[in-house]
Structure formats: structure tokens, C-alpha cells
Image (cartoon, rainbow, N blue to C red; front, side, top):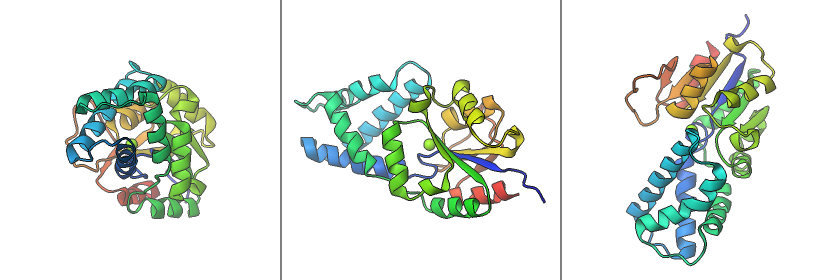
Length: 233
Ligand SMILES: [Mg+2]
């Protein structure tokens, strides 16, 4: 029997890789380096600022290069911390700590191994900084399961843009779009992008969010382990 799907596009952060954990560890290292008080509130503020900056990258209002220059300046002013080091250098140090991450979500490695062994063609579709994402995927041990890693920074477009998905679709082996399935946790980048590109998609709803209007994932799961059943059907 031939497979319904042959090809899986996996988002990386908070789909396979535990970004929240990696971010927290890297941030704590940066805080220790510059003497920022390590309070839960200071950690939370960073996550909020970072997330809102990435949302403006998704909408095209900000570039990744700009993000590298402003992220820690915005953060330090939000928490009222004075830092003598320029924000770009702080960010470079943060990224090198982040590159040391690569924690995976429970069940992610087993799922990738099983799909790979069963002959599925697996790809990573990720927004992010190319060198950081490649290093984290290497550290996580997941890299060997993937035919290719598509990082937005290298492609010059990010999810959910059509140009990003056009690039991916023209560089993967499968040419029949009905045999491709995407798994991701972000509605605004993964699900919106897949919907626009006409790719079947699975929303990994880790935090039990309500589905807002305008998004129509084909499947919704609460745990990455459930993705296997959908893909193998
Ligand atoms: Mg993600």
C-alpha cells in the first residue's frame, strides 16, 4: 500500500526542540555574565519582548539584523538595568549560549527516528538564525534524521511567507503537494504558512490554547507523540 504522506515538514522550536528550555538556560547565562538579577520576572520579561520582536519579523516590520542590534537594549531598558556593553555584543553572547542548547521535547527524537526508519522524507522548516539553529539541531542529535534544514535566514524569507514555502517546495524530493504534511506549534508562522501554501498541517497545541478565528489546521494535537498516528495513516 502506498503512503498517504511521504514527506514531513517539521518546525523546530517548541515542536521538536525545547526552545523554552534552551532560551531559559541561555538567558540565565547572559544574566550571570552581566550581573542582571536572576528573578522570574526578569526572565519572563525577556521572553515577552523577544516574542513580540519575532512577531514583527513575521509581519515584515523588522529584520533579523535589526533584532540582533536592538533586542537586549529593549530588554535592559524594560527591566531598568544599566549595561555598559552594547546590545549587539550582548546578543552575540546570548546566541553563543543558545547554540549550546538542543534540549528536545519528550517523544520528539523517537518520532523522528521511527518515521525515518519507515522511509519518510523529513525536513526542518524553521525561522531563526541559521548558525544557531544548525548547532542546536546537531547538539539535539536530531540532525541525522533530516534530509535538509530550511532556515529562513538563509532563504531570505520567513514563514509564513509564500516565498519561503515556494523555496521549500521546490527543493524537496516530493512533487505532489498532497503527500506533504507540516507539523508546527505556531499558528502565525507554521499553520498560516501551510494554509497559504496548500499544505496539510498539524497544529501542535502544547499550551491548550483556544483556536482563534481564521486558522484552519487539518489536525490538532496536544503532544508531539500524537503526530505519528496522523502521519502514518
Ligand atoms: Mg515553533
